[in-house]
Amino acid sequence: MSTLTLAAHPQHNEYLSKSLGAARLGWGSRPALLLIDVCAAYWKQGSPLDISHNPEGAASPDSMRRLLGAAQANNVPVAWAQVRYNHPQLLDGGVQAKKTKTIRAWQDGDERGLDALVPGLEPGEHETLVLKRNPSAFFGTTLATELMLQGVDTVVICGVSTSGCVRATAVDAMCHGFRPMIVHEACGDRSLLIQQQNLFDVDSFFGDVISETEALDRFSHAQCN
Image (cartoon, rainbow, N blue to C red; front, side, top):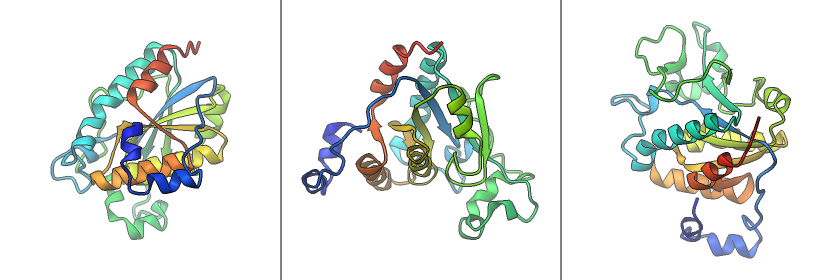
């Protein structure tokens, strides 16, 4: 998030007066790109999860494609996290299945095709792919181990939705000792207000909200071989 956008938040000066959000994590020595829940459900008309009415949400796949291209061109590790449920009564959806009925989009046998991949945003053959049943890409998956085995210390996060799975993943990335970098142009949510409030809060406590330009520049100098 740009400095101007952060400064526009009503509580910006109050937070700074208490040293909230003033510190920056900064980049480590080896970043990885993590794309969360990128599928048709979020950009398909008629989907209960559609965020394309929010201009920032509608534009986020283009930003993700640019980040993905830069990561692949510079040998930056790429990881994908996708939801999948296979129990016929959605017991593997846990308590969330009782609260959030829209997760049925990722249940085996759902015929709406909402879990379809987005063109230009498909996992590569040698890229990390974890299937998750919870909002965080780390909870109950092997993601942390697989990143550690690649020497990753910084996770560049993008995907959907900002207030849910992106936020949960950023918090867990920090808890696992990674530096979360959340690219604001490459995330989306149903409401511009929800998007901005969550990015402000994450930037204040859990990670660095950065621009696509900063991420692209870092990838171009990553030299991750």
